[in-house]
Length: 166
Image 1 (cartoon, rainbow, N blue to C red):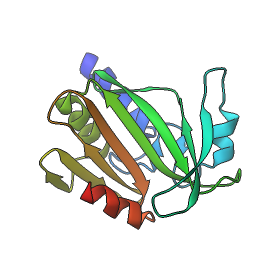
Image 2: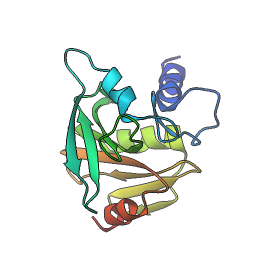
Image 3: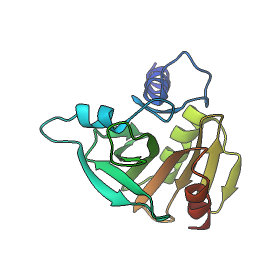
Image 4: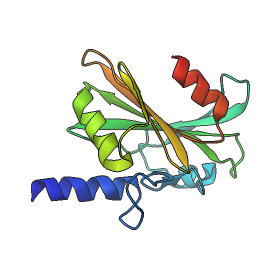
């Protein structure tokens, strides 16, 4: 029974039960296909999110939203950051980043496989997933420090390449 609840919660987190496993376009309410900065700003509570202008590594102006609601990743908790392509309210979501402190590699790997299927590539402490909407990288430390999981739309080729080289 507990396993069934964990699976159901994982599927709901990744986008609902209507899609096949691994075919998600984002996490929770955040979708690369539809989410704009205005939606993140409209979700503000007393605690967050906090959205600030930033510059991406390729020089583009962007908005970084942090202090988003945490999500459950295996037995750990993931802090979520969102990045938008620009500073206008209609700026599109271009990255979802999850940071899991006190990371248990097996938990993060299992959570990713449960929601996105098996990775298409694995290298040492990193694994990569891809579907028709997004590319994802799980960067798992060799010690229990911080695991990072990056989700990007397929259009973010430069950032995908940068993360592969990290």
